[in-house]
Length: 294
Image (cartoon, rainbow, N blue to C red; front, side):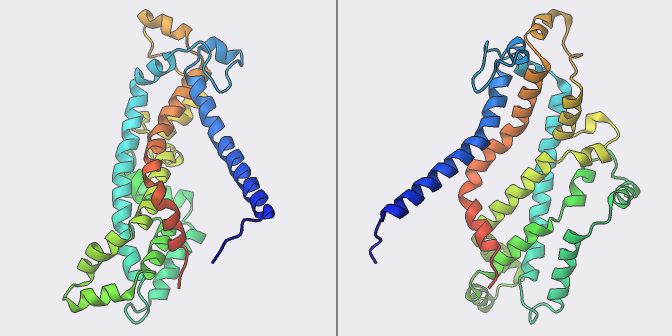
């Protein structure tokens, strides 16, 4: 079929491209501004001279960041949290979504179990009961307090089970004829075919753990156990230059609260900015196929 390119379609496509370009620039400009601020001198930042390009280029803010043991400790806590939390959540999501993707003939009360999970999206236990539960389990000031309460993200499970339901039923039937059980069918057929959905839900889980700050403040009594975002929340409220020694006083002259905060914010965002491009090609496919149910 011939696709005729009319003048109206050309104008419409041009307007769409211009609009998307504008939205992209609006998303990128704050990041570029933070990056420029982090490489600028404290005086230029305080004077409001920094826009999208560094003024009086200096790496003093990053010397500040990587010379602060509290920041590096919080960064390492977040790395451990993301690694443990994402791994645990992905395993639990896979083994939960697989049986829920079956119909009522294969899993009795399947609809009841599915709605039971959906109920937890609409209604939570509340802040105080959640804290008391974590405390009664002895998880205060431990990594498990940051990982277990959010170990089963129900929204991601819904995406994954709908993706499973869109896979051809003949694959499972063929595996069953060859003698494969549910466990082998899941890990050797369903999981390899669901890479787009797994990449999407994995990205959601990683970003959720990396950006979470309130639970660290809630469940951690000692600041050395804070994850990075919780530590950043305290830094943004009050800047601390106590780590700078007398022989590094020259470094203090090149810093300001704005440049130091900008450097810490950019370093905190950098890991996700690196990971996202590798998962982007799966992202749209995973969202679309996981949101449609036949």
